Image (cartoon, rainbow, N blue to C red; front, side, top):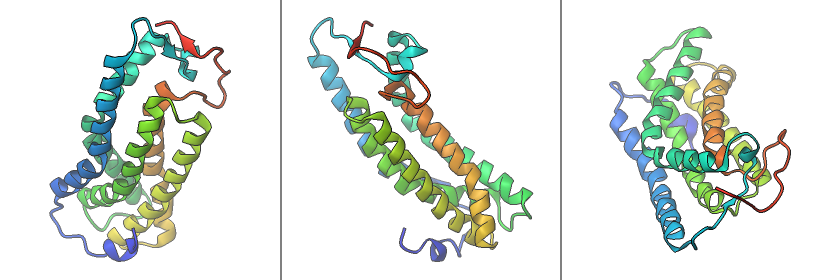
Length: 210
């Protein structure tokens, strides 16, 4: 975080993907485990017949289906970590190759994406707790996501530029695509829990009948 340019000048091959995945798991999964425990406690202590808090997605999806979808997405977080790591690296490497060629392997691009994802996913994990517990207004979540996208883009641009020994402007240009992947994945995960979504009409009432 303090020296992103210096950190990616050296990129030992072959890439130790296990080390990157351990880092991602270390910064992301503790908050995820805490959230799962909190939701389980809330479910056990909830009174019989409690309604489902209204969410913006209920305009398009039945509340019961949205609730199941939200739970399934949450439980898939450990599986999603390697998928996000692989897909961001793949997209980044393709765009590096298309804009002038890559001086290092696809594994090097994945490494850059993985190390940049670590601090960003740590914040996502913390923000998920108030989001899933119903204390995060939708507009605030979009603001946080925008700030995370900016941090991800700036750091990844520098990381890719030094990894593949190319100009900083080209690095930031290439970083737009994997940053878009991060934003789309994070936003789709949050959709079932957002209280409001720009472009959708507000849902009336405080609770929906499951």
